Length: 163
Image 1 (cartoon, helix red, strand yellow):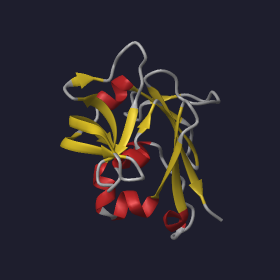
Image 2 (tube, one colour):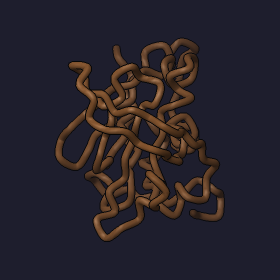
Image 3 (cartoon, one colour):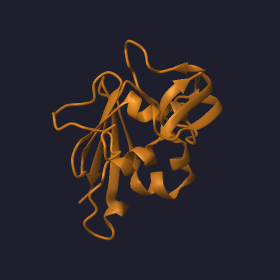
């Protein structure tokens, strides 16, 4: 984390590398957060979380997980809001290294109970997600079908203003 507490800044193109996520788009400057940056932030814990795909088929269970709320990561990114209603038209496109993408709205993250469960995991089932692969994960714990927006290999979060 740099001296101003905003995490590591990086202007290179492309997604985050192993164990890092890049926040791009409608931000003052692209932000790169590494696992160590995430681990230094406040975390939330969720226990006994079923992973259910969009068809309703159970895909497993996470006994416990700990992570940083997406809301907190977005706050660090210095989102550009030029007009009063900009946040009503903002989306976050969350992408994995393999091309998998999910979408959240600003209002969903900052104005509904869903936002309190969307987190970038730093620990799952008692194990740190810091490993040689450095695969970060994002899960939306308040979704009915948690598997639908479970992003493994998290790479980028793009902030987009819909015209």
